[in-house]
Image (tube, rainbow, N blue to C red):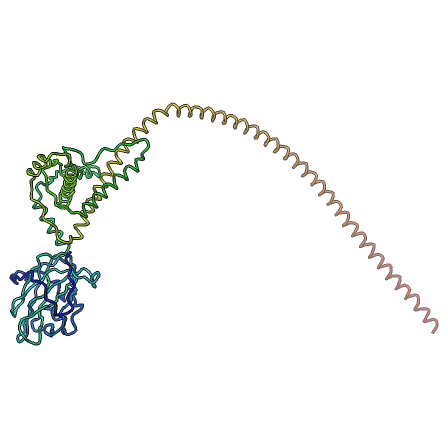
Length: 469
């Protein structure tokens, strides 16, 4: 890619003029300006002498970015609203008694600051000495630009100020460019795939997206050897496809379309242009890959046959893409490749499934008698075990009944012994009560006798005392 580092001094001669055009400004009336303050475009940087930087982002003619003509380096860097593919830009100076820009360079970048401080040059231009907006067309945009730098090299006149009133940038976003390229491919498509109503299934959808060839198959049939693992063989095939796609991405050769029979496929129930277009693109890419394989095998074919094939080529040659394609186109191309890889994997798994089914059927037939014999032996052994368990359970049950009877008898004996002991204890308690009552009566009798004895003794002593008196 041609990249140019802006000059730091005015002593160096400006680069040669690549474009000096004046399209009609009225054609841009209905287009969107991506360098407008209404969509959040901003001026990131300019030379020190520049003043009123934001004036170039609005549509007012009485406001302008004022710059000194004697400035050592005059430039301005603008951040656009979106990443676009620049095709047109507008510069203008409406101020009288001022010098007008003449030779200038335009650079673009997708990031700021640019990588390695290298801006991508999209053109060197020369303006007219006019007090009006001047429109300039970009022949080769090269990249999707988010940041634009305009560097002014020379100017008309000998005035002190070199103002800039208008700066507009027009282009196409990645989605717009992708749709445009899709429309162009539809117009250049030699044959389209018609679709009828049919009950769609995932398997049918994959079959519809497969390429169809009469001359030779695109991929060799898969064989399973005794020493090679199916998974390893599949991974090797997938790695080969990935390497082939990577080589195609790096080289990007110009593909010459050849006449290839198109299969007549019935339409699916969904009748949408996007789905039909994706199917057409998938099959077209498969044809292109088959053409690349034919070119690789062309060493074995005679030159007369090669010239005949090239002379029989139909359809226009696709135009060369821009320096940097749309991200949406890249995503769609990679999705198509992933879909083809998934389709190949699906068919590989389907073949393996069929092989495994055959193997399983053979194994089932071979092992059916063995399984039946094993089941019979298992039933016989189980019956014997059940009989043994039944006999053992009856014996255990009899032992349990005997133990229960013995325990019941023992319990009854212990209960009778406890009852007899309780009766004996009751009799002893009753006897003890009677003894206590007898002891109490005897004690009371003794107390009464002692009391009576004392009283009698006292009464006997009283008359003797009276007698002495």
